[in-house]
Image (cartoon, rainbow, N blue to C red; front, side, top):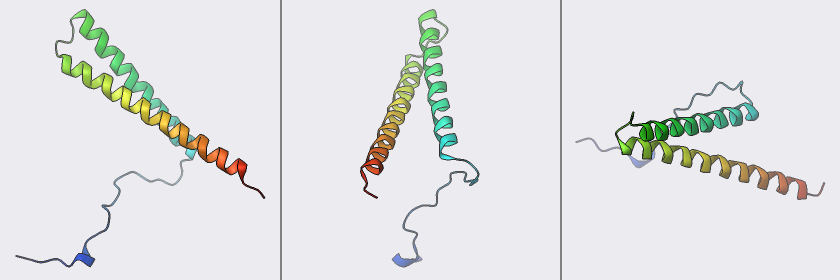
Length: 94
């Protein structure tokens, strides 16, 4: 049995996100909104498929709609934080 020192362990796992450094914050937001839009479209397709009988698994429909709802909720929270940051900056005295 090998004992690892606590100090040798990483504090947080390494982020696996792709970082190119060439993207702007606006591009990131645009990409996020496109993903939210795509999730909404997938949820709509799943609902229509269920109503027409093409999709028999109700769990698939619920998962698609819940994923779309959560992604939209995340986008709204990001928007709210951006607005809060802007308001905080505008209140700063120079």
